[in-house]
Length: 250
Image (cartoon, rainbow, N blue to C red; front, side, top):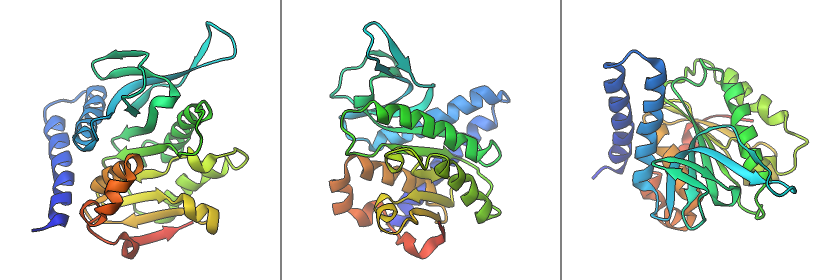
């Protein structure tokens, strides 16, 4: 039996559904929303029952009663259902920061759409959420999922990732809320390793993992929210040693 084949089938399924819709409609706005729906449905299949995924906003209270602040709209929010929900209508939600375990921005082509600015927006939303959490021991999953980014030059991609990171160098806990996972396309994957930031200050890794980036993005999310089970079955969730596929660290 092929565990690698199983994970590659995730990529094939996502791309097949995306292309099926692309062949039927011309309206880019609707196409973009459906791309969000496709990856949302895929992620929901793997989530433990206590977690859900939706789209919407995160709001937090201020010191003034009757007043609050809101995030920008977030493409996908992963939240713990054991917390109260301020508002829910189908998959649209308005949540408080304590319930949020992860956020994801979904793009058709992140490099063409401006990767650095996409990261800045994701960092802004994540900081808004993380700063309002009372428990700051657990980092927030902050991901960007792109179907078709162009990776002709790894240095260009790494610069687009690194510049927004350096812009927050004065921010406490930036390693706990900045973008930490990016699926650039089906072959290229980025991960921020917090423990390497603490040890050697070179925590950014770009991997080339053929037809497995989408699956590794999902597996890393599952590891993030329920790490013990994933790590005890790591060969099932991560069927190759991606250390052999490292293309750049910085």
